[in-house]
Structure formats: structure tokens, C-alpha cells
Length: 117
Image (cartoon, rainbow, N blue to C red; front, side, top):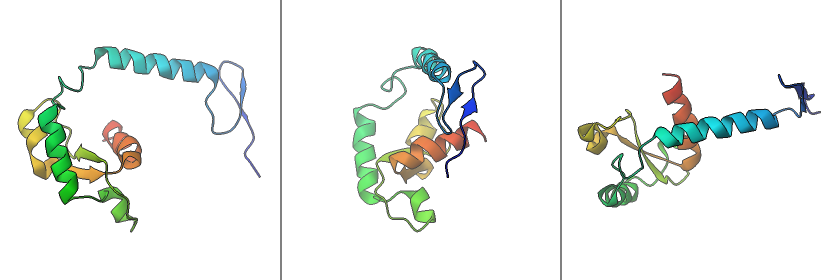
């Protein structure tokens, strides 16, 4: 049995687990404002040298660290900075601060951890 729909603050009836159109638009606008202020990936240090180091690291550490905690074997595709570097080059390149993650773990669990320290 599915959960009942909800009423959005704008008055629309929205199926359970979905976002109302007004919420989707607000999220899209918020993300666009964030992206407009954010420097490019290259300006943040993710250049050719990073791509080369990333490939080497993933070759040595091919499995997602988060998934392995739940005894799941999933290939990693992201080299994550355990402590966000925030532009600090020493922290950016310090390999002890790197961990292999799959995209779902990086894009959900890790992002959630950084928002709620």
C-alpha cells in the first residue's frame, strides 16, 4: 500500500516522495545561483594532473570504501577528499586525505555528511 499524497505549501497536491513543480523550480534556481558563484572545476584544481593522479589512485584502490562497510563490492569512480580541501593545495594533494567512492555514495552520503558536520 502506498503512502498518501501531500499538499504542498503552494496548494498543489503532490504524490508521496515527489517534489512539487514549485519546489523543483526553486531547487533549479538555487542550484543555478550556486553554480554561477562557484569557480570552474579547473580553477578548483581538477586539471590534467588531477585526472592523471585520480586514475592512478583508482587503479590501486578500485572499490568504494563506503559500500565495503556494508559488505558490498562496487567499483569506485570518484576520488573523494575526506576532509574538504576548500582550496588548500596541500590538503588537495595529500593522498592520505583521499578515499575511493562510487558515484552514488559520493553524491548522496558524502554530500549529506558535508552539509551536516
